Length: 295
Image 1 (cartoon, one colour):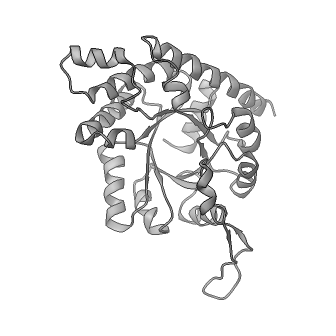
Image 2: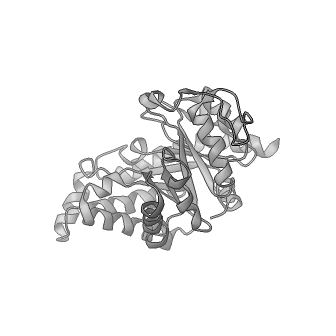
Image 3: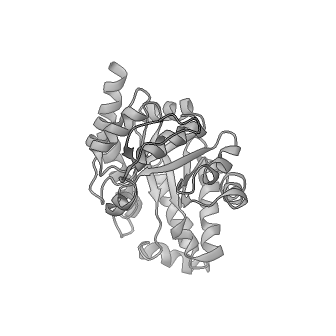
């Protein structure tokens, strides 16, 4: 999916919502698990059965789905198979949805190429989250797949992100001895460097919703890129602050909500409850898109 195609979907739906499929098998409603047993399926089949219901219920409000690999990998090969089935289902039934694999891979060279192959060739996702800690060698192999996106961790929503991400860095000098920039937080250096590896059509950045002040600063630093914004809902971030600080002329935002939507209810009406929460978030987003159109 291209940059313009993604923006077109945002315009059509009046939403920049990404629904996170952090499908914890311990939290899946008992009605789903009972249905799995009734059909004689393995326990992990509950992952796809649950995901399918959530996807069908929320897709009218979402432009993207994000699968957190940890919740599938924790169940071994059977769990990974459920993640693959989820991606296949979205591709077959909702081809205009942007599919993100939240894997936070960060290895280099041939290892990174195998990760890229797993998520882009075998699974056919649109984007994968990558940690840039080891430099360009950890990111560039993913950019070898034309039309696929790398979502680089920049400033995350967790409290201990300040252990490293916000540390002030010394001025950097080029091989010619020229000063490249002034003292900046590490996350800013990450963004500047990543934009040398690819452009707005191929690279997004993770910027936490819990840091709206810094989100505004990052938008000034990277005016055209899309940001994947976690931390809305359970973690305390909100749509208004994110949109005010981070929206650009092409929206430029994918705001993710996971637990607050998919586990909104544990009864047999879990899918309806998820739809209601997704609709509520989309409703909060629409005025910002309408305002953008009228400017």
